[in-house]
Image 1 (cartoon, helix red, strand yellow):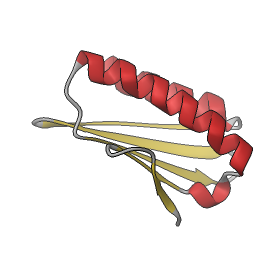
Image 2: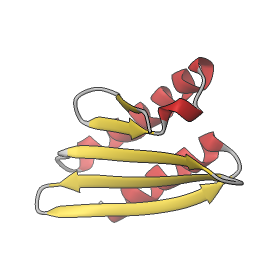
Image 3: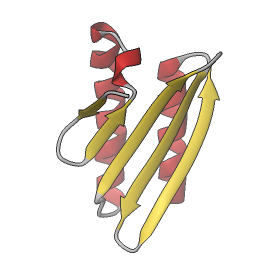
Image 4: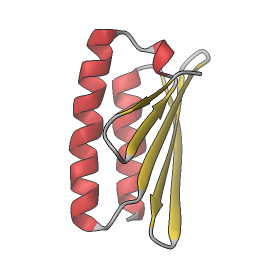
Length: 93
């Protein structure tokens, strides 16, 4: 499984499933959510994993001081899935 670092604190696993144009949009979505998250609370690392079965299975793990926040979602649309899983993490902050 291919892993891509999107900055110092964001790691994306499953990048082999994503073409170049899709990756540009994903970086924008993830970056916008991440900026909002770090305004609310210090963040050590955000780990995202994408798997493809019938739908995209997206798992998010955010490491914050003294805690770990987790969310998982399955969706046909990768963009909607990434957006939804990051919103779920933000609710836990």
